[in-house]
Image 1 (cartoon, one colour):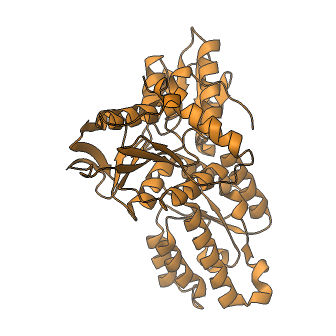
Image 2: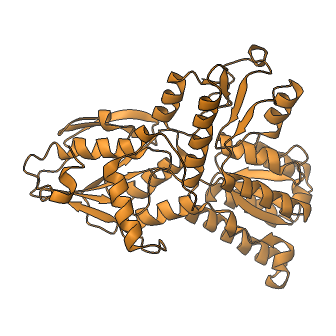
Image 3: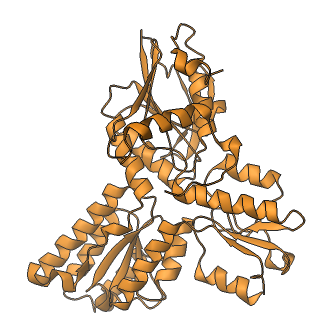
Length: 411
């Protein structure tokens, strides 16, 4: 695996030591059991895999290289480099400006840019339409592309399958930058449709099984339900006969598999198992390895008898939100940006992913002789923030027994 040069202030000597020890014990990365830091009155359970993934480190190395190489030029990011507010704020402090926000709203008009400015494509990639706009405006002279290689892999797979006559079904969040980019690239080669979850797939499957899908009323119903989620040339009566599933790489891996298996079962029901692969393509290899590893590591960590979990990351981070979803199914879970959300031993301010607001919870740490906490993060959260959260929680336990090999790392 390539070693990237990312800024030291995103690193943590404590977390690096933990990860280094695990890697030396498990060089092939087959052991998904969590790391446990036992301080007597408090124990931290850290998933085997968390923090910056390959795609994030690649993006950060490239953009900081762009900053270093162009000290006297304007640098524009098409949107947030990754979904972490501290990383994006740090880039802002270095003069980097954002053309679009994470919701796709343009905040800097194109006429403000010149062909001497630096354009940086974020890790999520860019739509074909924006790419064409940049070219048409002559802004391609200085471009740094940080698109995650695993996102590009999905685009390439969609292109291959599209040329083979498959309709591309994207499992993703429609407004997410990555899904928008994948949709934009995929629809060049194939009819393309986006589904959010298994419930939408079940609705889609009802349409697939219809014999009278040429009925204009049924087609109208289809287009209303999937409004803005289909390519302009989409014909339900024709394009639901041969389907391949790909995904936004940060979705829950098991959900993508569930969707793929469900579509597979529908195609067997309609066309017979002997004709399955004329109508369905197995595309499990588009799952991002980091997403898969992080989620599997969370499942393993949740097998521990923890009192609650703290998940750290940007509130608009898809992969982090999915980790929160997995944790809160089993134990109380608090989704925070940083240690600043931990107000005291008795109060924590955290993000409710259902209400989409920050709320405060009292008495989140139980009164008991030993408290066990799962501490996790998404793949866009710096290790330095994880360390700060751990130290903040540890400070509430003055009788904690810190082993000698960690004392120098916790000062």
